[in-house]
View 1 (cartoon, helix red, strand yellow):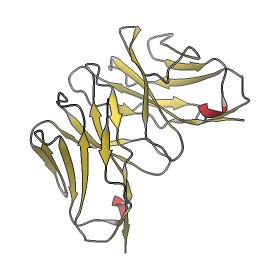
View 2 (cartoon, one colour):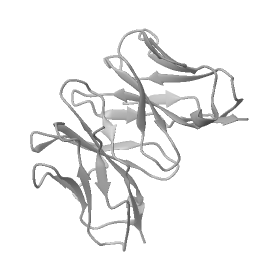
View 3 (cartoon, rainbow over the protein chains, first blue to last red):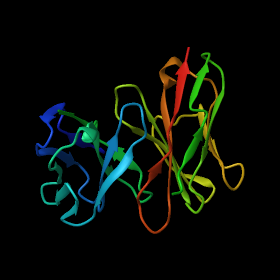
View 4 (tube, rainbow over the protein chains, first blue to last red):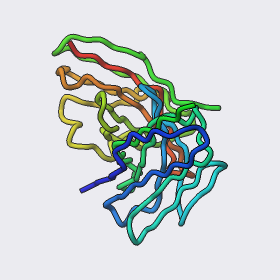
Length: 110
Length: 113
């Protein structure tokens, strides 16, 4: 069974805060992992790809623990514009069919 | 920057009618996908398409659904006889050969009355 589980949220944080989201996946054979961001009623947009133990891009850091089948996303110095739903996404097949988690909503307040 | 486009942005139809949702993937991409998202729920995979044939489909993609690449640029999703529960956002995505990153179009919101 293809499962991707995320923190239910929502997370309400003030500007400047550090926030972390967690995700677990069921397929131990998955080799690549993604964090997408989705604004209300918009399409998912790629935030970060994770292929090895982790990836960092500015204020965003993703970490992968293959043994525990766990991925995390850390956002430092939160901005108002970071308010969105963050989707943990895992390909489960050779054609990279994506399985999405339900998403974790982040609300950053002034 | 190249992007996936979809038309229409919003489609309203009566139950039992046929609808065709259109997508123009990024031009040098070879893998194409349809996903749907019912309001308030997660994004769900429908079908993947490669080399002019379906490569994988989910249990949602039953006989009422079909996909086609009628020319070199368009990729369509047809729902033959719409049901109320087909109301959702439908996203098209495409990816190239070098990476497995999928790029999503802005979606078509389908409302079945």
